[in-house]
Image (cartoon, rainbow, N blue to C red; front, top):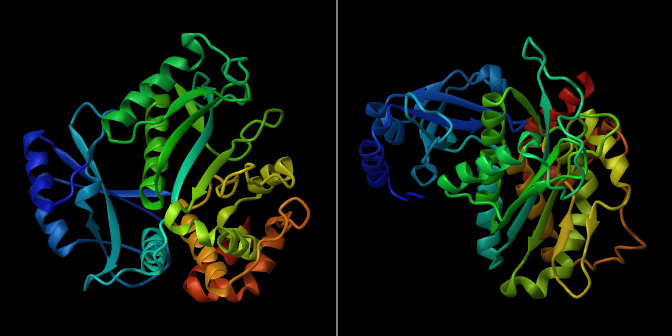
Length: 374
């Protein structure tokens, strides 16, 4: 990866990049982008690129994209014109961060953690379904193979595409630890190693883009939604949070903070009705702490969430537990039950003082209004 503006300019010129895609995410975690010519990259980094923010954030304010040079990557699935992608900060015209930008929310959380002397890393496990297309290109809601967990499916069963995706991710500086067939027929799993929360979110979102692009090239459809197929297992998204040695003394209150605030956050971690079908399938197994370790595995959020906002909320909740010196309850006996419906999640969010402290009120209201329309 590149880390300075000068290196980014040099790399774009060296690689003969013809187009730069400036990518960012809306409040729901959906990727949006603006494409510019390489000749405009200097202006973008210095003054930002203005865009109409009302259709995305419902604000009349003029917002600007400021590309982050350290995120510059060539898109290996685009052959012509040669295209690079840069993730961006969403800001006002004076460069001040836009508070509803999930990347900024996570940045604030990470900065607060650094000020506390806390370093949190994460591993991620992503699953998705590949479905065939009909003659019109529409997805056929049936598995494209009959494989099960870790099965050695034939090349036509998705293994070739999984390996192609892994190679693309490696070229982009995000090599997975491994890839395999998932539990469901036509389901696939890709696992990333340990990194910080911002890089982890970037890697997962890059994975989704790579999978979608690879699937289209093979006339397939990729689904990361919680339950694309009724009679097959849900798509899981598992994260393992680790506080490392420097934060091991805070492990218990950190997890106690997450348990205390998990219901308040659920609307952001699970924003769709389909999300609650997955939670029902999980039952009380949404968190697991392996014996003899300080880490824990979370099956929340799911892949319909804005991962930047979600990771930021989990970090804020853990730090609140540390500051308040909360005690960790017995996970097997006193696990908080997650909301069973989107409406229940809205109620918890509406009375949460924790969300008032860490998120803009406009963002909470936006999620509540959207939930009522679903």
